[in-house]
Image (tube, rainbow, N blue to C red; front, side):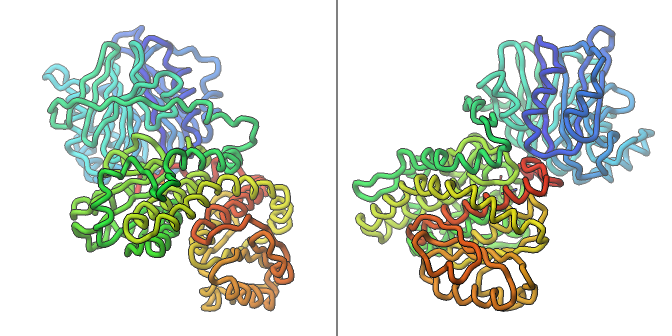
Length: 616
Ligand code: M6R
């Protein structure tokens, strides 16, 4: 999704801003732009450049130019209002006050505001909602009457509805940046005599580990000497300051060709981190510091609702089985985007769990707030420390899998599964599970990273199998029980990076319609590990083979019989069914990765996609 970087300090702003944009490239974008104030004239001059495509194109555009200035803003845009053009790219400028602005989010009432501003004589050049906000700030800016940049931004934000994270500069105030947020992430890195505003810690951590977070409706005015934080109604507030984790090493490719590949292979180490210190084998109790203060409320809860989107939703769907099976806790799972707009029944006995890698997904956040307003206790299962969902939930458990850069979520998925499995054991042990049974599952859980390592050893074989089928434009992924959501995840992975159409569904659903799709050689991936419904899965495999489909089975090591049923078999180590999704998903992640590489796609930056979806 769009990325924001802004800088004020003593170093030349332009190279720093471009470097910051590069660190945000993984989020997905389609154009980029930068503006730096040149203080050598009075008022200062706004030096501005934009380019469609990669940040590299913007750099080419800047070649041979020498910009002065130590204050500037830069942006990567992921088009929402208006096509992918240079004119629509940010920064946007107003038509008289000398304002330049970058924005993430959507101004929902932009057309009303645009009409109002047009009546006042303003002329718009772009199709964007962002230009409207820029122009509104310019319209309100009146330093002679005490409306400086900070006041103009506050005034404009009082008029807008929607979501925003913005950074604004003005040629008449060359030593100031004003930033603000509502519903879109924004943090301010605090350096020595310098500040870096960014939508993502990745753009900050190379420069400083200290950062302040802003709450919704907060505005910050930053100079080289300090900052003032207020609400849009100009009530002063004290911001929270946190230490960013130094994860720079983890965001290097480290010899891999793509982040997705690196993150798939990192899963054993990532999961060891997730589990570290949280499994207490002695009496079978899971130790989750982030939720222990609420243990009684969780055990007494009447039901759990899991809300999430995309891959995180698939992890939550697995958890729905585990919470019910292991902890006998009624649990529902829902797209956050649907939950937020219906009239959900939520009461004090409800615990809502927001599952999100980024902790910034707009729909998940809005659904969480909806449930909180209705009296639910809220938990976050989040990867990014200090993210909005992590801050806004009553309690939670971090994934600790390290930064996930690839747009296709992989290690966050297995991390979410590990955390949600621990949460289900946390409840189960307190409600009904014997210490022995809990300790046994914990033991097995502790061994999952080793088993994933083993499964990754089959990568060359999986590559060969995948490459045989990449000319097929339609694939099916089928699974049962806890492996039904894994089938959905396999299909999502394949489509989002290889652009092959894939559908995932419960095995038995195939006979209710989708079986009509099966024709000669169509790849059908079955998750056919040993489990309660193994025999039923074999029957469905036979049905697909009888119709000419080509079966690729993910099976349990030692299962010779499956070889007589499926053309290709990918083995994963044996384990309890409840834990199997952490293993069965690994071959599917690798298949998607190798398919995308073989089809020549940009694996880490798939078309039209963004890492973190901060708009609806
Ligand atoms: O950051 P989140 O986990 O909340 O993101 C949710 C989805 O946007 C995300 O999982 C998306 O589906 C990924 N591209 C899947 O690989």
